[in-house]
Length: 176
Image (cartoon, rainbow, N blue to C red; front, side, top):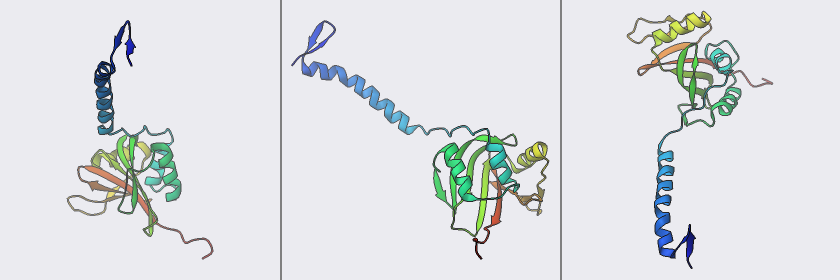
């Protein structure tokens, strides 16, 4: 069997050897695509009001609702660790870049929503105060103080970045 390419006829062996560079290139591109991590989808326009309000303890915390919201916005969580589902997020809250959002699972007696901000706690507190007027004051005089707001959100050091969260006890089930 001979394969015709253009005006030339090639034997099966020659046709296979001509196809190999194309296959090798396609396989290399697929391998490269698998090795490069995908960026998190951009945050929806409702990200700040929905997630930001929850993190500042300005709304009711329902981990099932926030889990569904984040799955719809960013896809499935990339890890489940420490009693939380972790989502990659490419967005900003109060003008500060956010890299991760955490939602509590049902293993804890607390319900929480948290975010990792790619800035220091001092700068994050300043951004929040300037954007929405909520102050986070230091609760101790340690080298890495916890900062708390009146509604109950807290800012803590997370390596070289900040973690901000709102945590509340779960409400009693209906009928108790």
